[in-house]
Length: 603
Ligand code: M6R
Image (tube, rainbow, N blue to C red; front, side):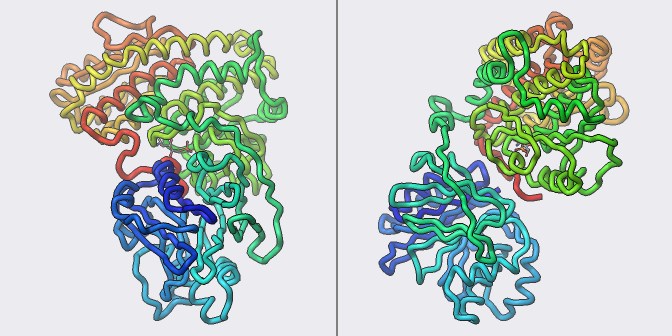
């Protein structure tokens, strides 16, 4: 969380403000910018709230040829102007922005910074004060003082530091938090991700953990904290900048929901051949086929996609699967099977909770695969193998197309592994056809979005809580439907195994409580109808999303036919739309719900 942008060698203000606006998905509770015109004038401006508030505060004369900016997701200290970055040292020589968490900031303050006057409650300020103190005490230049300080700092960070005695440099350091160096013609840019500054350059250097750098307008030096030079070659990134634009849409979330049929076709083209054969790196297929158990680790929406993946791998690859919340698994490893294989699902590829698990997997020399939407992301670099989701940039904080892409890519791998092992179900699984059905069905469902808007207006406009219920695979979708609704509309929603309600939670059902029932499971369709009657009898307003085979008159959404294990690809579409409209109709910022950030890079 938190987004950072630094520029050296070009009018920095607009580049930083544009970059920060593109990075708002990483946090948006306060923002700040430091500019230096390299001619003795420097400016520091901070504002609570969005980048738009910061822009309003800036005066026209605040310009610079070097600068750093930050959009914050608060970890240490409330979202206030004082706690907003950039932070500075006591003598106002050094200015620092930071994405990450400094674990030993209290110790640093106690041990090295007694008597130093602090202006904020942040962990970050301890670092910039430490750089300043070291520079003063040891009479060091800025870069040397920075490296000395880094030797004492523990935690995750992407740092951008400016020393106003050398304002033609930006000093950088990376550990566990993402940071890219963009190479321009006569200028250089450093940012949390490449997409945020794609309008300035397409040439990037991937920075790695442990990198420390000195960036000027026409040079960059990367080294370790001990001064050992490191080679980092630039590469050209082939991303269409329009893929990350909103186009005619009011919100990214709806654009991304609408893009899902295209994502299914894309995955089909990339991962399946004309004869329904899979195109997956044989090394990955062999590694999974040799395993005796798959462990899927993820967080949030990706975890919910993993629950669907379990069904796919168990049916089509004939291998047992355990799905874990990364944040729990990381500190409570279960007894592993003899030949485990780990799959990390992560849209961003940066989720700190998942990285904790992967680190331990690597320490045990166990094989792993990251399925991610972001090429070159940290989880992708650190795992043995990567499969890309090919969903295109997902900007809205609420994940939609990455979820369906995760299910589809897991289906591809499940089939590939099953075929390798000679599993009959995998041979018979016409995934090419099923993904075509998914694309068609999704299109039909997004085309009917007005109807979902009507449902949102009718049932969700005034409610404070709601339930999703389902059994079998629908339970997994109920969890995701509930997460979507609560994160963007702030309606407290629980995803529930339909039959579990009567074991206690049904006490919460009262007149007009909205209950969304999902029905795709042949084994329990009739039983779920019974559970619906139970909540209706207590006054609930029930919406039913049912597969065509199970639909009855009066159901609110009839879902087109598809393989049972892939039914979440369709069931989730009206659920995503319901969340979208519930939020939009309340006048909320659908793409940037309160308290959230797109990539969760703190534990
Ligand atoms: O980038 P990841 O898929 O690893 O992120 C995991 C969760 O933080 C993410 O899915 C989150 O739950 C979304 N905001 C849900 O819409």
